[in-house]
Image (cartoon, rainbow, N blue to C red; front, side, top):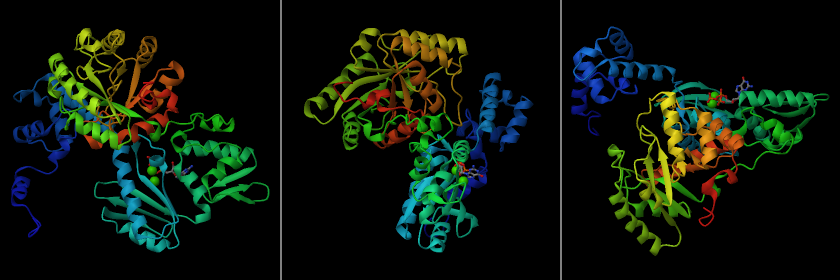
Length: 497
Ligand code: DGT
Ligand code: CA
Ligand code: CA
């Protein structure tokens, strides 16, 4: 490849298989194998051709296909069409951080920050907005438009440039005067709804706000704008954390000086849902524990899958027993971090748990989740969850709605019933920090806490050490849900927990 810029085998394959075929595999329910079959047997390459073939029921004639599989693929196409094309926060955030760090390295920067939905840490991001102030705007724009990830320059000016990356992500960079940085940051952080409400309130109070500052309406005098706090403080409010800026009551709360002190990453004392290579995790319990020590945690719960989930090498009671020795050995030899013995058990399709009560009773941490039969109807899912909540050993429900952003809708389960049951049985609900889960989502987690006083747990569901870093996504989701450290169980120290 280095000599010729080509790989012969790849060239051959490209002749054999059209490149567009890869797009079919983005359809939920269509893997590489099925895509290949669709192409070789029916000559299908595009989603449009696939839709046509489904309409004419041509898939049903393929070996291994039936009405059901045809229907499943049709639904998958619906999902993909509904998906907004917005990227996951977990993808946008590292990309933005890389851009910021490259700009810092190569230019003179007074201030720089993400703005827009990224700064508000929304679960999905349309485009990435970055705001900066510098003594040399031209140099900044030159540098930005020549970054290694840039495929195309959409616009290049002295105050705003936009680029498109090879992955198809749009990044907007704005350069503002240092003395306007605060007001510009406020303006470009949004949300639009928050800003509209804030501007209306400002007008009522005799002020005008825009990206250049905050001004008195009567004589136009500039009152501030260098710092973002200026805007909120001059209007008589507390500074509002970006995650709350969605016009969901935060302006009213800030005026009453009753904003909650949001949970912060540094409040997190441990991770209560991680896997090891006893089930489908990539590394040993020891390696997971060492990584958790590096994060400054005081405890982790190793919650391997259980026997009902064979595809994830779920553990039998006997294997759980064997695993215990490894956990005890760590705990005997280490004081800095305590390993809690746990499982992520399965809520089977009839609502029973795939381990006997005697086994569950031995385990300090029992997480339970739905991993199969996710397409059951509302009644079935409801019954199933209700029964699982009644199990006295189940303490935490993992990824409670089962949604996968842009890929799979939440289960048909009734959310109100879920919350009522969690409340009644004193069961905690998880905010799963995996980028495509973020489940519970922000508004649901807020309701669970405010209305039902349910305790939440922020967990990474890590299957490898580096995924422990996803905790910040879960914390962001909790902050968007207005949660404080009191609402989150894994902010407790080990003994309280
Ligand atoms: P996104 O990119 O769809 O995930 O969402 P945002 O919130 O990042 O939206 P974007 O990129 O269009 O604009 C960034 C922020 O700038 C937005 O949250 C509010 C502010 N903004 C931009 N243009 C306007 C505008 O025309 N009117 C108002 N009120 N605000 C604007
Ligand atoms: Ca944006
Ligand atoms: Ca933008």
